[in-house]
Image (cartoon, rainbow, N blue to C red; front, side):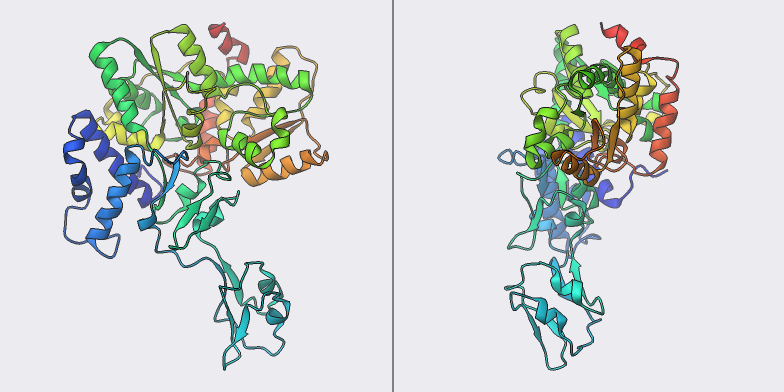
Length: 473
């Protein structure tokens, strides 16, 4: 069974695996420049125009696998040399232009960017065009199209533009670090920084001096991943890697559901704080609504805080589907509790870097959270949990949620709230389509992932949220 959706993910994984393998063996730095050659050992490239360019690009991938550009605060980076195969973006005239007499495109263009050749076919002067799209709207043959790059289409917050070198450029002031562009780029030219070396270092130090224990906090969406093995084997694999124990982030979700439902009843209106990309979107695009964002930490940070308060010798590594969690872990409010973040893609690379075949391992168990905590992983789950939290605490308040599936839906709800026309008292904001199961760091994406999360949740259905959080009181 395939471990990844795309070959781009597989290429990224090969680099991560190679870097991790050498880090475990303390042979990373002396052989750093040999990694691209190890991945593309022959004299011909099957991916680029020549083997030399492919190795140059792989060299950049290695740098990002080792933490990327320290001067760039964004966890999403562009590999300029890899971003040269997409056509120039913008409006252009296609072969469908019939050279009509009406010339509506010319008439509507206020910049004089439309001209015609001797065959009366329209042409667009890019030096004058401002990409307003009016010409495309009036063309009777739909002959003028807006050719956007996949990364621009994926980025719903319009943080991506094309620079003078014809490569993608990310506006850090707009970017919410959701990673949608990472997953959609067909060439893997946009990718997320990896902190896999940090995690290896933490584990190795814990094994050498045993001064602290390394806790793996796994997102509930893990139940929809690693579909070639059983979930219990995935958990056993984490302990084989050197983690002291594995705890469900869904327990943190239960804790948040209780606190957030109470906060909602007290304030009368609230937006969720679980998705860091959604919270960042409010900060960058709707700052006036920041007072409505729940004051609770996310499930990741809430549980990590509890672990460190309980065990003074703990180190916490969060493992999930989200690139934005890497940015969240760097916030001053979260940094003391979360030591590093891995995606599921990086976890797979870690397993294979140590030749751990999880399908051969016995099944361990996760039994920390309730059904409601586990379904935080998919759209609508948080709202259900908040309603349940109100019920279990006997709070007389009816939640009326606006369940936002993807950042475009979030934008609509936030716009309505800013104009005081939103018919809801709670905004559940999820930047990724489907919720966390659609995160850029997932191994696989698809509708079946929702079913897997629900199935996983029902395995704990006998627990109330109160039952789950009672162990942390």
